[in-house]
Amino acid sequence: MMALGFNNMLGDVTWGLAMLIMMLIPVVILVGAVYLGYRLWERGHKKDSYEMPAQEPLEVIKRRYARGEITREQYGQMKDDLLLK
Image (cartoon, rainbow, N blue to C red; front, side, top):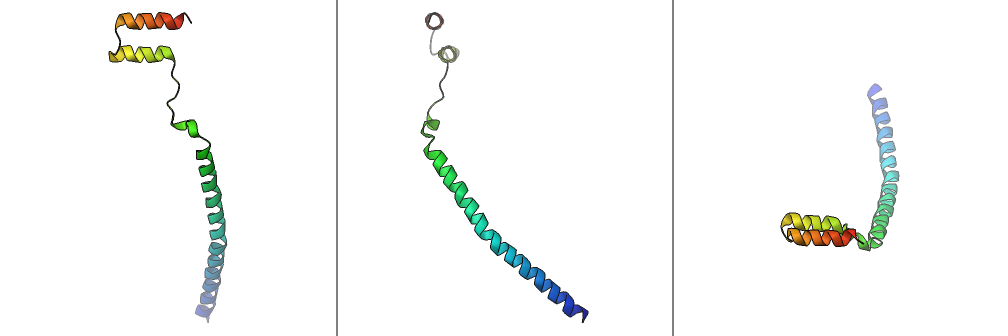
């Protein structure tokens, strides 16, 4: 008798969990669809995100001088030109 009552209770718990999972599946799908739509919409509106970030001109010539692309005289002239603006 005791085993029959336990099996019946276990069956009720199993059905309850199954119903809960079946109710959560549409909610998860809906939340996923909204999130995906938001990400796609956001990506479409960020067309500038692939451009190089703007750099300060003085930083650019410092890096070029450090890499050896320009001479000390060129660096000095460019720096003077930029600071006089």
